[in-house]
Length: 237
Image (tube, rainbow, N blue to C red; front, side, top):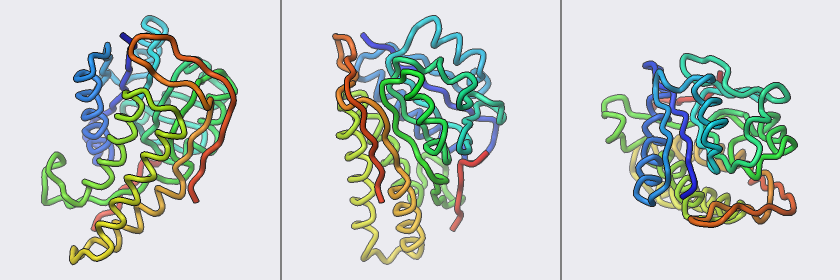
């Protein structure tokens, strides 16, 4: 079976606690589907351990949560994980999703030039809302943003190609925008604003044909670019 690698920093930073939990739900989805899973969580989400796992196991899929900026995504305690044109060749041959701010501007295009199959992330600051009165696992205000993230991961794991995966993320944003449009929830308007913002900056880059099947090798040909036109939380560096 293919291997899926997750990098999920968590040192008490609020945004990372949410991002780690959401991508942790992706870990559960990968396990349910029978993939070989490497879950580098918390203190294990370091550059050394991520790189060692990639070099040893050559995962077909890499899912990364981390604070970011246009050319960098970080790992545990804001240490640099990947930086455009410096060490991103490690992602050659992978399909990936980045839950991080702004990496779609420079880092993700650089991954593709270094031979990554395809990748989905955000060319804008990833914004989401929370209600701190709830536990992270039960927070209803954060639910739309969680569902968008998990939907993208599930599509990757189910063997969808780039365009279908990107479309699924956009569709989940639209689904929640429609749900919230006539909602009496006092946070609905701000939640809609965050969803629209993230949707407009969701970017997909890479092969039109690569996918993660359950028992055969990834293929790749052609390149495409897809770009959609009470607490606020950001995944900036």
